[in-house]
Image (cartoon, rainbow, N blue to C red; front, top):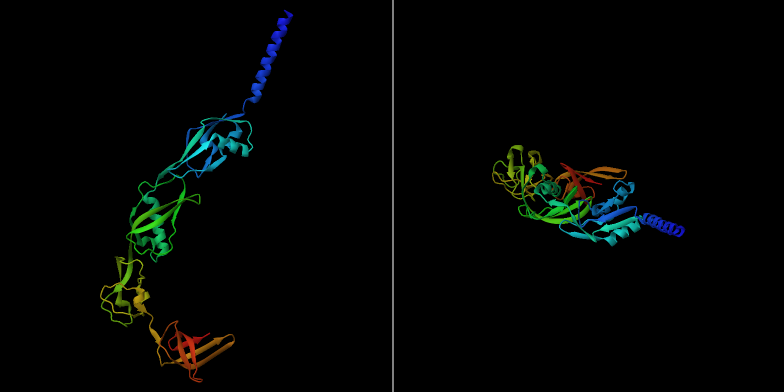
Length: 322
């Protein structure tokens, strides 16, 4: 009887020790990997690819935000294995976590189609930045090459990197750079049909070559601009007093290269020559050897020394040397 009790005590003690060891080896948390996961941000986090239990532990929130690397692009897939997860846990020095569930997680990126509404305001601002036209004068009639183009969900920004004005506004082909959180994620080549509708100046009547324009020689017209790269005169004030370099037909649009400043000094005129250098200020008479417009440098001859000098036209009959 006594030996039976002793044997029972030994068995009971062994069972107790076994239970203690089982409790000691039980993990503090269990991480159950999913077979598939869809992420929305630019970075994969541990909480995206696994369920952590017990979920009510304070440490779970910190574990869920452990980075697992960059998210795949829309339409692409990335694989995260148990080994990858174990390495991240080891690097973060997180003990007592058991990894179970799927052997690997297939990760995709949540996305949405790129829409015209995403492109139109960016393109309008871009055209305004590289041309003389204002945003309200720029009409985007069509955007193409958007079919099947996916972009990441979330707060995206985009821009066109081209710096010069396009040669063909009706059939644009431009690279649109899409970024998330300031990081470029993809480049999309889009086509666009852009028209410019603006008020510019046209000849009110037939105007001959060399004519000095008065206010009633020009009139404003709102028109679809035939060549958006040309520099058109935008106001009557900008044309007044200018001289035509070529004749204009009635209704012809006036470009800046058709106008020049009037001559205010003519070759052979006696001009007032001002010399301003450091503390030296002198005024003398000179003869113009060239025609000159405002701000233009011309040759003049000092009448006292008969010396040829270069001077800038600063007013009617007046030139300056600095």
